Length: 97
Image 1 (cartoon, one colour):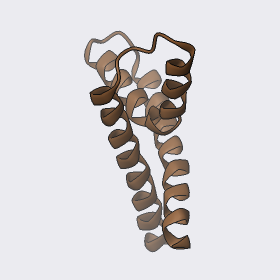
Image 2: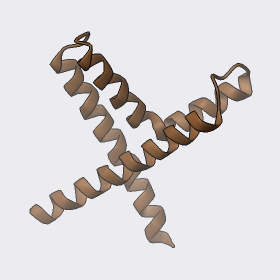
Image 3: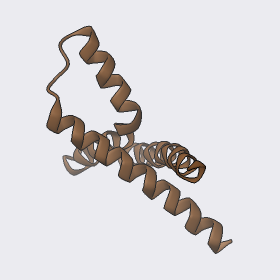
Image 4: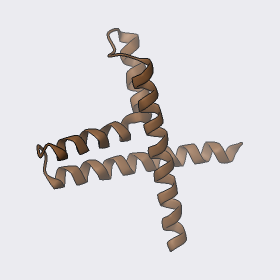
């Protein structure tokens, strides 16, 4: 059972890492989207960058005491599940090659 837990944690970590890399690369390269094409690119990037952005915003609000611990926990759980889905996709693509 410990082996499966280690695999799950590895997959979540891989997904969250990919999310953080995508979010930070987008912040370095692009500004706020103004055009329809820019908004399309933004939403496409947020599919991958979402967990990192969600967790960052939740942590900021928790530090400001403007959200409850339950809301922060829910945001962290959603980010973890989203990271798991991204991690599974990344590892499947990696194993295919």
